[in-house]
Length: 451
Ligand code: NDP
Image 1: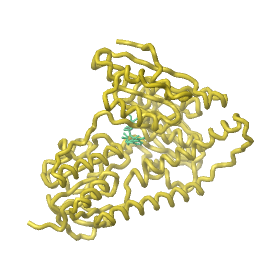
Image 2: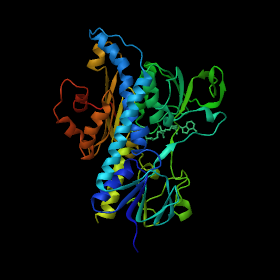
Image 3: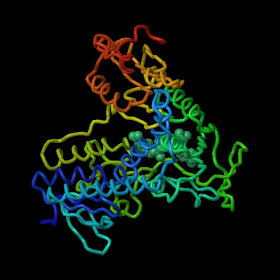
Image 4: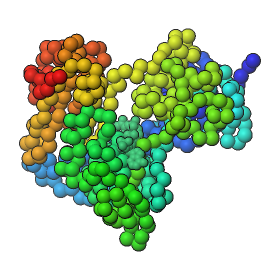
């Protein structure tokens, strides 16, 4: 049977774009449909604009530090419309690069929503049908907002980059990556930030000591973090959004940002109708090679809800191409994935938390918390945390957790050593780079806890 394409990709985000480009480079005929903007969540309304906002917000503290170092500087106000226009131009530039790289590789692009009509056919929004030997679903996810009275008044991370003006006062709901990152960003930009998290401590699932350290720093930086608190209802009043909360702390805000998780984009795609199993959350169920139970249909990235990070989606897309187009069956590697949460201070983490490691057997914990040179000199009380979790038997470093400016950069490198199976003694025999914060990782002599 002949098909229009060897591969049709639905979704122009990190995973879909990588798979389309690599497949086309093998000589395959590839089509890709994207309903919104090329680049997906990461480029258009996620990692990239977020990180630029992290940089923008860091200047308020940097200005204070500069003064402490002897510079004569005064911060004027932050011009959000000016920044937003520049941000939008940058995103358009990146979108253009994505588009042209795909076209250069020979991928045919369709600026349209696509759904599945049968195991080898996609239907575009205008009703056109395209057949393909393989179909890759890479439709990502979208913000989830729970149902409650007044939910229609809230914004999500989709809207935050497009605001006409920054709110004077915002409530952020959630305790995960997005809630904590935006609490810090907006606080740095001069917005009065209150954050509600329903549980006992933010960043559930990460190392407890690191979570406490970050929460403490966020409060010290002026964020009104309220744990064990949730929203009951929101009413729109002339003064703003009136929020009634579970802890009796009712207040009016200019905006309420919900960052209460994301759900896979599978609604209306036609997957369920074809019998492709989805989990309770709507994620596409796939095997180790990203293949669904229908042999011609594969899925990668957030739509499969495995590890929802851009670099993981990219690896999944590349492994799919190795498997299907290069005759080299390859499973994406989901072990020891390093990551960073771009709070202020930043959090870099790889491997097991102290709590998770202890469940597997005896461990030694090495940790140091100290005032770093740069901010200490400027008179700030900020402390960094450097932590290694070590297996008492094999001596392997099972986890590394860093809370410090630049922790995302540091953890990328520590991640290589840990992925290679480095032991505590390997760290110890590495000579320190002095004076740095990271040298602490190779100079911690005695465990602070064992067992
Ligand atoms: P997360 O899953 O990280 O966090 C969701 C938060 O919302 C949790 O604190 C959760 O609480 C809370 N929550 C869920 N439902 C409700 C509810 N009904 N009422 C109140 N609170 C609720 O999701 P995010 O949206 O922050 O981020 C989505 C994913 O995107 C991340 O998991 C990550 O994979 C990725 N991401 C990665 C980034 C990075 O690499 N730096 C940055 C941003 C996103 P509880 O803990 O109690 O369940």
